[in-house]
Length: 147
Image (cartoon, rainbow, N blue to C red; front, side, top):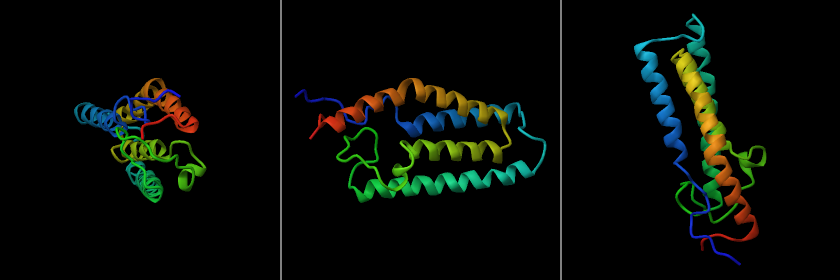
C-alpha cells in the first residue's frame, strides 16, 4: 500500500483565502466604479438573508467536524470522513456556505462586480481545488492517508 506524504485534504490554496481575495477585489472595484445589480435599496435588505443562511450553514458544518474530532483546517490531515449533518445533503457545505455569504455580500453592496467575482472564484475552485479534493477523498476511502 502506498502512503501519501501530502495532507489528505489536497489543498491547493486555503479555501477561505480564495473567497476573501475575490470578495475584496470585487468590493474594491465597486467602490471605485460602482455597477449596481438593481437600482433599489431593497436589494441590500434581501442580501441579509443569504448572509445569515450562509453563516448558519458554516456553523453547522463546523460543528459536524468537531463532533467527529477531525480538522477543519485544509492544511491538516483529515482523521475522519464526515458524512452527517450538512454533509448528508451536500458534498461541500462549507463551499456552499461561502458562496451563499458571497452572494449576500454582493446584494448588500449591490455590486455587479462582486457577483462577477463570485463566478470567477467558482471557476477557479472547479479547476484547481475540487479535483485535488476528489483525489484525496478517494485516498481516504481506500485507507491511504497520513497517520
